[in-house]
Amino acid sequence: MRLFIAIELPRSFKQELARVQKEVKQMSCGGRFVPQENFHITLHFIGESDDLAGAVVDLAVMREAARGIRTFTLHLGKYDCFDKNGSKTSFLNVKGELDELDRLYESLQSALYDNGFSRERKRFRPHITLGRNVEHDELVTEELKRLSPNASMTVQGITLFESARQEGKVVYNPLHRERF
Image (cartoon, rainbow, N blue to C red; front, side):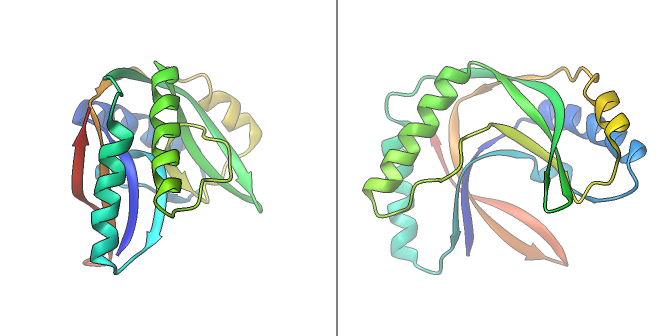
């Protein structure tokens, strides 16, 4: 099983992401775009695991991390992309009650570390990936940054997902939800 912990997004949020993604597709020369049903905000990538006992630890970690976290509101932010080895990853930033999101992230990282997982090495930058290997030039990037996505959501918990291949497609199956 390939596992990760993330924030699930409501349908209205995903629909607005799909609208923005469509504009990115129209203005780019290709790429691998995330299916609408797979949009999420990653908090921690666990990786490969066939250990069912470890999955129980994951649930305990999620419960511990969610303790004391209150619901909070997030909004879609501006378009951006980063270049890694000549390949662009397109995404939308997340804005809103980022202090509470950072608190959740740190709580999760601490709970994972206390249970034998390694801490994330890179700085947490909340975003939603639209596509990988997206090809467009800097002028298009600047034009896409002028888009004004409009969607809000109340975050009420975190989800443990399994990433699986089904009928040739990557599907994210929720395995456990932990509410605040």
